[in-house]
Amino acid sequence: MAYENLLYEVKGAIAYITFNRPKVLNALNRKTMEELDACLAEAAADATVRALILTGAGEKSFVAGADIGELAQRTPVDGKEFSLYGQSVLRRLETMGKPSIAAINGFALGGGCELALACTLRMASRTARLGQPEVKLGILPGYGGTQRLARLCGRGVAAQLVLTGEMISAEEALRIGLVNQVAEPGELLAAAEAMAGKIAANAPLAVKYSIEAIDRGLDMSQEEGLFLEATLFGLLCATEDMREGTRAFLEKRAAQFKNR
Picture 1 (cartoon, rainbow, N blue to C red):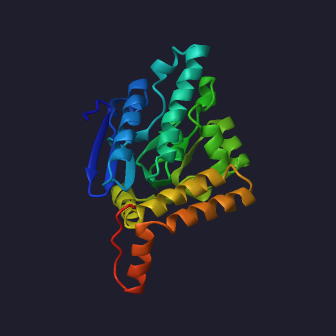
Picture 2: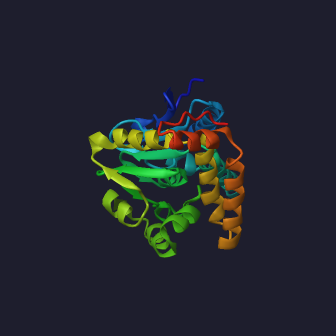
C-alpha cells in the first residue's frame, strides 16, 4: 500500500516507518494518523516482520507534534474524538505484539513524544530534544502523554515535564529513563537496527508474550501480574519454538524459530 505522509519499507525482519512531512517537521495531522493506523495493521499481518523502527524524515525532527493549524479548529466534541482516535492508534502500536523502536532523530514534542512513549524502546540522537509543551497552547497531552510518561518516569518527572512544557536534551531524557540509549546523529539508525536485530533473533511468540506481560502487568497488583506471567509462561511451553529453543541450546547451535 502506498502512503502519502509515511514511508514504509520492510528489510529482512525489520519494518521501517518514516514520518515524511519534513516541511512541517513531520507534524501529525489526521491523515498521518490514519496512515499510521493502516501501516501498523500491515506490519502486524506480515509474518516476516519481527520488529519495527519508527523515525522521521530529514535531520531536524522525529515528529514535532500535532499539526497546529488543524488543532486550532477543534471544538470540545471533535477535540475529544481527536484525542480518543490518536490514543487508539498509539495503543495499537503499543499492543500489536511486535516490538517497536523509536529512533528519535530530532524534535520529539507533543504528539511526537507521545508516539515515542508508545514504542517499546526509545533511542535518541544526541541532538534530539523531547518534551510535552501542550500547556503552552492551552491544552494538555491528548495521545497518552500524561499516562505513559508517569508510568515510565514517575509522577514527579511527568508533572514537571507536562506542567512546565519545557524541552529536555537527549542526555536528560536518558537520565530520567525516558529513552533507553543515546547515539551520535550519524549512528542512530544503525544503533536502532542493531537493537532490533537482537530482538528479532529471539522467539517471536516469546517476545510477544513478554511485551504483554510487562504492559498488562503494570496495571495489576504484583500478585495478579505474577499469575499472568505464569500463565503466559505455560502457554509458551506448548510452542514449537520453545522446543526448538531448548533443543538448540542443548545441541549448542543457533535456534531456528518459526513463530509457532
